[in-house]
Image 1 (tube, rainbow, N blue to C red):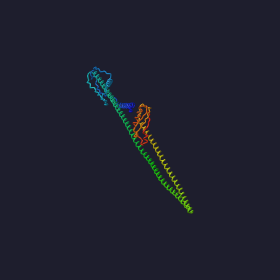
Image 2: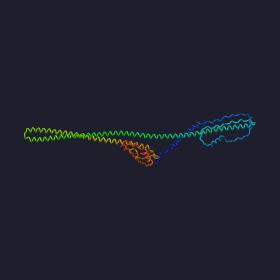
Image 3: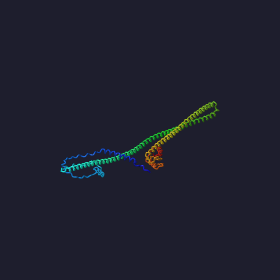
Image 4: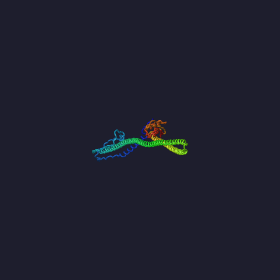
Length: 415
């Protein structure tokens, strides 16, 4: 498996070194222009004029011949090696000692030659002093350049540390923001769950009330029907008794017919009238019973229709709740996939490679299993690592939506 904690790239190192070098060159140039000073002109030397008669006679004095004072000074400078910490203190000024007064001698030619030799020595000392000053100035410039380089390196390191601190702070802020977003989402989910629970409870209460009302109405209808049946039975019993009485009376009338035709006729007419009245009453009772039965049947049909309507409404509410749960689960799965892809560290050299991950979560959002299919082992390992690094996942508060969101499948393509 490849190491996903990659060191800083070579291009970033080269760019940082180039930036430091540019700063060093710029600072060196500014210091060179600001610290460069012209070489001080040689100090004037007071001369004492004497007459030739006062000079001693000349004596031949050979002078040591050298290539040049500048060549010797440069060779000596090349052999000097810096062993101490560079210093920017100004070079000491070599004092030029004026020639001692010459005691007049008789030999004028010798005195002239000695004066010339002293003048040549003085000029040589002046040149040496100028060279020493120039060397000191060059050394001061070199020390300033070295110091500028050190300061530039320190500044570059401080800038790099500042960038690293800024990057670390950005990562920390991003992590805190992600935690805050997760907390806010959990609060919103809790609020939505409370609203949904309240709505569901209200719906359930309404359904239960409708059921209770229907049950109470059915009970009342049963009681009323029992009362009506009892009344109808009483009416039927009365009619039957009336019929029986009429039959008995007819028998009695037939038995008494022989006694008196007029009385029998009168009794027969009375009996017929009573029978007609009883028949009419029986017909009326039958009509009333049929009407009551129709009313009872209509009530029963209405009760059945109410039950069917309540069942249909409950089925519709269940379908609506299931659709909402699927919608919430789909949104949660999309959030899970985005979270995994944000945590995915694409392996180097895997451009164009593809992978498919099937993830199973627990009720709390922890990863229970990850199955990754890919022909590239690095791609497979990186996707599995991203899935586990993104856990835990914020699960929906609704039980049905949470059950739907516990399993999701995501596809990955390295770019």
